[in-house]
Image (cartoon, rainbow, N blue to C red; front, side, top):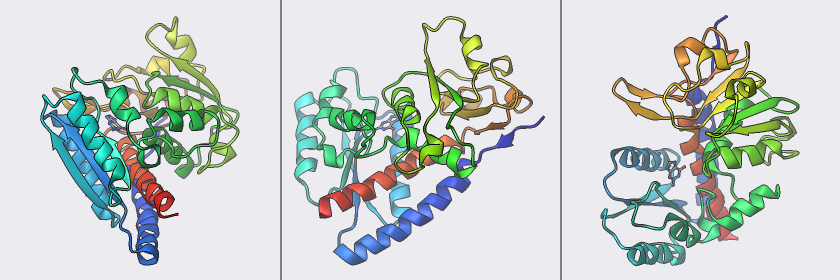
Length: 293
Ligand code: GUN
């Protein structure tokens, strides 16, 4: 068996074309150009690449972006001051503070300071609360990207056993919330209604869990952690990991080995990462629309 490759580029390009059309319409109706403000603290090379990709993507769909760089040793007060200024700035539709922040900073306090209506990452407690109640304001970018890939390739989650590896606030936890709802705001009931198992570093007999999964989602940040023997033959495997190794970028799954076992698998790079950026554009447009009301 050779797995189907779930190419994120195709999905992202199709969604970005649609976003670009809606941006054009919004600009012509309101005279407002949606604008993403990205805050980057320090010189972390990976974060610099991610932020550059996000800015480039904004340009591609006709949105503005502005980068606010702060030195590694910025104080908590200075960073909070910047965020508060962006909250008040009418030209800014969405605010993104690139994570991780340097250790001396309190990331939760910074993220909580972002106006929930400009919280395009969906990290603010009020937006996470609304998401958990099934009435989202914004949808978190990476989990939403996972749903969009599954939808594009017609791989429904309803009635399926979905196993998520990783319980992070950015991916595992919100994705579990979304998959267990009765419906998805953007993808409908076929891309919700899953039986979700969330596994983590204290899960006993992990293989017994993962081999039950019709859909296995890896979001743990360990290169090639998921080996072929952990996957049920024919299962759909979504790899959210982006790990920098001596041999270049790789995901959380042993991609080459899984090709022989899985029914479908996302590549890294060129998989979920493309969708994360795309769903950020979607949220920035949504924020601009909310603020124009
Ligand atoms: N760092 C890694 N992933 C993300 C993300 O989705 N948003 C932000 N702001 N920082 C990140």
